[in-house]
Image (tube, rainbow, N blue to C red; front, top):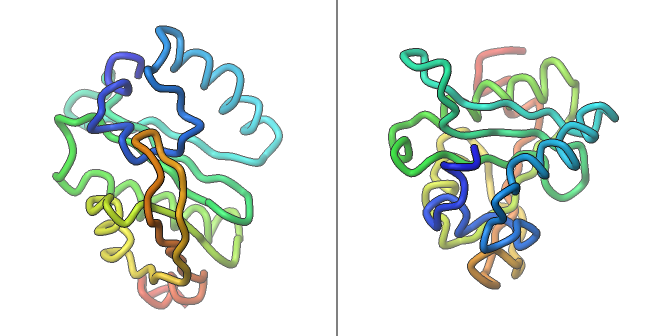
Length: 160
């Protein structure tokens, strides 16, 4: 993770709380001090992404967060972007969010300029419900809040 994450094509539209320049121990600190404690509390769920052909290599990460303003976040190493891999992961974790965890709504903010992330929301049936300005690693940008309800998700997936 430490080798893949600190690249502009990965961090540009991540929340401003991500330190930049990324510190040499950034991945370790994040996992040890933030992700694992949140998982232990039952507030967050995190997975690494790996190719079936190279399961030993992390290529990205996706996580779910139980809060009111942002329920899913992800990043993918530059060599694996624009191949549909994150859409595939988003579908799996969204199923988990609604069908295993039982949440009624998934809400995801993103920069309008983040076309790749916006496309994932479009392809998975989400809709824009609000706009606002937000701070990202690359600066302050107009942002959209996307959401989908459990009922809408299940209908889209053919699950009633």
